[in-house]
Length: 162
Image 1: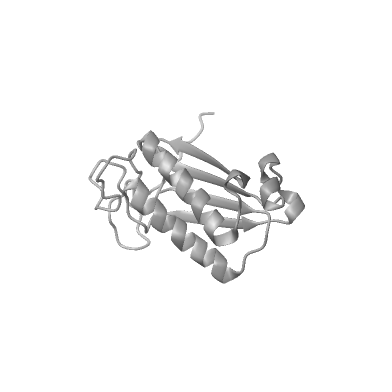
Image 2 (image 1 turned 90 degrees about the vertical axis):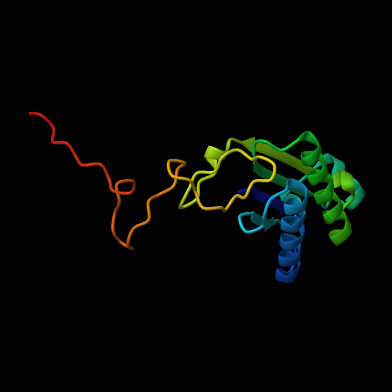
């Protein structure tokens, strides 16, 4: 369940944002060996003066900051390939000089990625992120809508002793 955040100090149209999001999801899936339906993308645009990076002068001060929150387990090579793929994507689409792109990859244990029906494990090669959760692996028991189960019902309140 990665969260890929792109902050740019130049405007994009809605179509450009959608195309960028589609491209970064596709590249993440290919390089990081996973599906696409759980990849979250945020694209924020700011005024030119709101983001500065000393290496952005070859792009006239235009820059991109990329923060990728990913599950622990990817190889050093995968992380480098992903970083270079995003630099290339921003250069190809928007003419940003490669040195004007600043990337930070932050790895988290799988347990820090929470879904409504499960807690994710750390990443492993060949995984199927959205296979049915195993009992006891953070899965919630199925129930009729609106009916609390043992895992979703709040704990009973205890009366204070006087």
